[in-house]
Length: 116
Length: 409
Image (cartoon, rainbow over all chains, first blue to last red; front, side, top):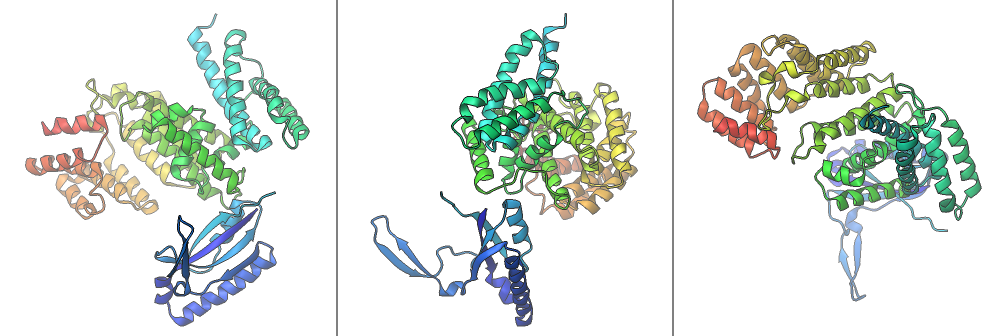
């Protein structure tokens, strides 16, 4: 089954760490991502620029659209990246997510709708 | 000739055992929870009709599976892998030829798979509870709704959503691997303990179904104990439940008010049941892996073995609470430890031990009820009255309310 793994972090938690600590975590993430990809568990994904760069487009009920600055959900945790997992079942997906190497981050696993 | 009600009870027991085994196998073969449930429901209705008049078949599992298979024919014909699935159902009926011995591991895999999937951590606790009672214990939706004082439509909706999530999120149908087992078994035991507590001392409502619910939880736990005989915490939880049930008759007075431990008529306790639960706990403890359920059972066991309130071994009980605090450092455990301290060192010492818990337990009725009793014993009737009034405002359970109202009048 394919799942999207949304990766969110508290910008507060990341800001509270030293640059060296964060660099070390980034390095661990890079290595982790490489391993998961090599094993075929992660088949796609990207890191995203910080939420300050986000722009929200809302489609009104009348079909018109409005554009606003910022992400559409304001919260303590901001989505900072995503991966596409290809694993046999939810337990395997949860195992991948549980091994994510950044302390304080939050991950959401959602199955991808596959038609046909 | 056997008594009609005896036949009915035996029939219900056999059906309950075989039902969970059947549904476990059907979910595995058909990969469709709704269809499996429907077939089991039909087969169970047929069993009640036939077994009641013709007697329980020598091999009830095979009988049910054959009946379910017959009813599956029309439903499956239009589906993919029809032949393969029919062949599997036939083979399964042959395998189910052996009836379940009450202490045998038969059908262990299917029944555990079912239970672990119902209690998967990706489901909400409410969904876990509803699904376990519905599919493993075989309660109908109305009974689950009555047990939790929730509208039947709410329970039905909860079950539909849970089954949809199992399917759409790809929750696997299997017993977890050894590495995951401790955490996942903990989840199962939490569900069973919650069901038991809801039945044993309901948080609201007055329905007679409640005691039945506690017995359902005890049955489910004994099922897990038979299927996983080497897990000491399962045995510990089972012993804990049995120690409570053995004393259940003495817990309510004629007026329906809760009777607390010091005032209970211990002659009404089921002594043989207590002795066998204590023995069960000893078997768990010999496995050498201590856990919170075993320690809680040990504490209740010390109370249950005492012939009178005065003969309670308080020093040993405080020792067990110290052990429990190391495993499970929660304010509720500290509260209970303080109450044991009161018996050893007097109410003033206990009130002192309670003081630091005030912030964390302010919303917990038993904290205020306990303080009320301690303040009364310490000679502070005004403080006691105030604490009991706080407690009364925090509980909806009618038996507890009656007890507190009695204290206040």
